[in-house]
Image (cartoon, rainbow, N blue to C red; front, side, top):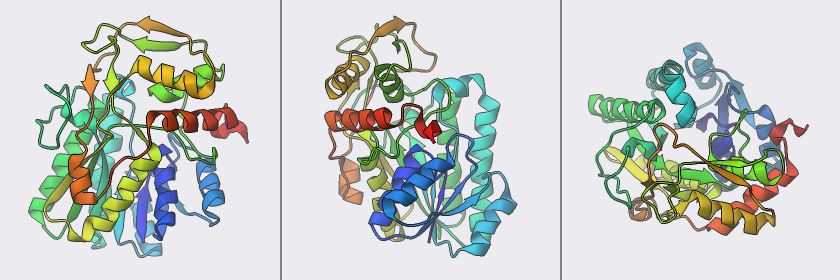
Length: 337
């Protein structure tokens, strides 16, 4: 059985569906600090099966041990963590405590229970401000904010863990910018408070929940001055995790893989695509750059194709259509019910 930490979150909940579709059994561990139990109710509805859940914090070793006592855990997909770049700059201690200390507790409990297979949810932020694009896995690493640093430190911890005991099977998935939602419109991205990510902010503006979109900076060295990112459909991303967990038994050393589309879209490109998908005008205002933001970030996804036989197949129009369907059906996210 697979333990999915943070399985009620945006990427975790979609991955649970894809794990089920691929015939895998799983149990979710989540403290619902940045997610809703309703997402798991919706997942259960989609897959027609009750979700196994243990509620707890990954910094609580006793709560984690409960999972291993009650279930035969063979491997772990580790999503649990705080994930907002801007917030991490304001709250670095909370990010280091939750993300790094939490992972240490998880690995200690895994080791104690002789469970040594982990797929870690890393991020393209570990590349810092890359000198060139597209970004390959062997690029220099340096993070520009505490969120990215927490991911980078965890990667280093997991590499050291492998060096200390090469029975460990470790896959680090560095993903780019997840967007979109499940085709059913039942689950999607539901950020607390003001969204930190572009797509939910655009969607909430389109549905009338926000007056306008703030575009942080229009003086970057890009085709229209706004930041360029590699947006990847959350279902494609979820399927990358399924491929990783199916590959993990044959992994040698630590496998590090980018999950992205290889295409870069600017903020204004995404606004236009969303206007097309929704039929709504998205009012926006140009505001100053955010601390820690970079001009361009998109993947070279060829290694993922070679080692995981995975590639993203959903385009920007599908991303926007699925995000819009989720937003229209759930204008207040999971708080509708």
